Image (cartoon, rainbow, N blue to C red):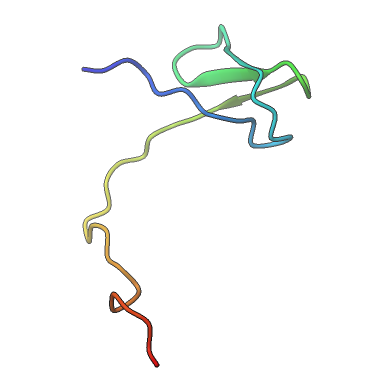
Length: 59
């Protein structure tokens, strides 16, 4: 199993100064806006990933 994935930026202010929070797995705190948030992986979708386009531009 790989290590936990870190978010790239705060979902509230967009700053990148994030640190793990002591609340547990997936909890992060932002030093810029002084907010704490938690990320949670819900699972894979049954239908998978589908492209919305046909692969090229219509002329």
